[in-house]
Every structure is written in structure tokens, then in C-alpha cells.
Length: 100
Ligand SMILES: [Zn+2]
Image (tube, rainbow, N blue to C red; front, side, top):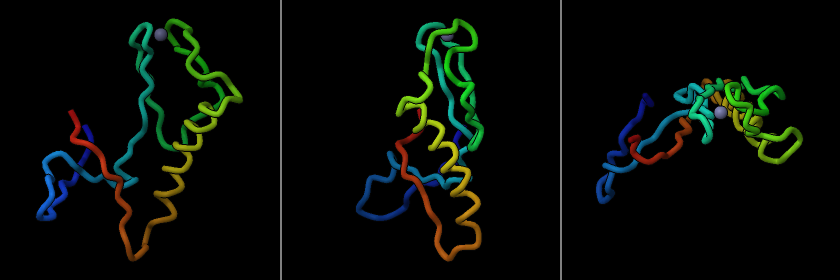
């Protein structure tokens, strides 16, 4: 379940748009398209060990590829944002579609 904040501006279809803050991001989920196994990773919790499905060993991310680096960077950036935005005089929010 994602904690969301509805946008409440007038002249805008707020029903389909929500905002979350970086601290609302608890992690990401990787789901194997072959066997359906899901793996949750917390911000900052990505290591080089994430290469393949833990159940069926289908390769998900080849080490030293751009996508491998980007997944790790995304999780590290979320963790860094949470720390660096504390006490600022603005709030950063990420706009998302309505969760299904
Ligand atoms: Zn699998």
C-alpha cells in the first residue's frame, strides 16, 4: 500500500494524480516474469548480488550493465534524498498515477 496525497488544485483532474514524498518510498519490488517470485529492496539496499531470480535463477540484471547501475543508483538516490531534504523550507513530491 502506497501512502498518497491527492492533488487538490482546481481546474485539474486530481482523481488520477497523486503525490508521494521520498520518505513514502519504502522500496522497490522486482518480480520475475518467468516464475512470479517477488523480491523487495529497500532504499540503499541494492548490492551487486542482485543478478538473478532467487527461485528459478532467470537472469534479471547482468552486472556492469547500465540497467544494473541505474537500479542501484535509484535506490541510493532515494535514500540520499530522504536525508538531504530534512529541515528544508520546501517539500519535494513525486507525482504518480492512481495506484491500482
Ligand atoms: Zn524466477
